[in-house]
Length: 273
Figure 1: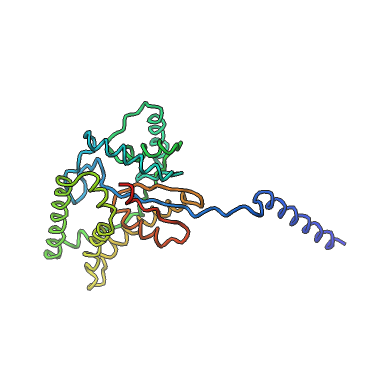
Figure 2: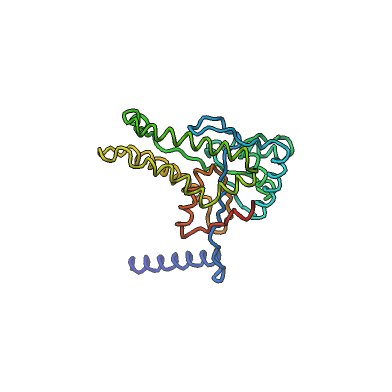
């Protein structure tokens, strides 16, 4: 009798659970569409000059550049993002969103950084209450590559020559190209390959000695971007429309992850420039 009673109780509980699910999700409710993600890669507008590649970035606070950024923000907002992800750690969300709230209320003047110049503008136009940080660091890593290069003068010279050439290229671009041209170029397939190719040039350093210093340094950069993409995935759930704004070195790799992700759809940013 006890076993039969327990069986009846189980059946009743199961039927109740099914009924609750039916109420929560109507049988004919359409499945939500996969999330759409748009990646916008750019140079850092307030570049402090701490990177190995050094150049003077175009001054985005000039009148013509400001006019373009306002118009670009309006075009990006037509994507109707439900979330805007920006390159800062999520631990700073409270601080950044306090500024964003003040900006929406007309009490905060936008600084030079792209977080504000584009991120805040687009989020406001889209009617969003908050923005989100998605930057992520890797665990502590001993970048043995840089110390090893001093023992290989030819390799060290090769790296220094690459850095000098890239610095000169960026300096020329920012002196001769418009902001529109720079941003369009930063999101082109050619520039994505160029960004990733820099790491491939040094990827085999010390491999012949079984040390793999170059490959380990490259893997650490991809590791960081995989962590950042994990946060993109966390935010880009079915039905969401997510705008991601980050340095072009990141988006070159994030774009590969997005295109390999069967649960999310890429929205092309090129048509908005």
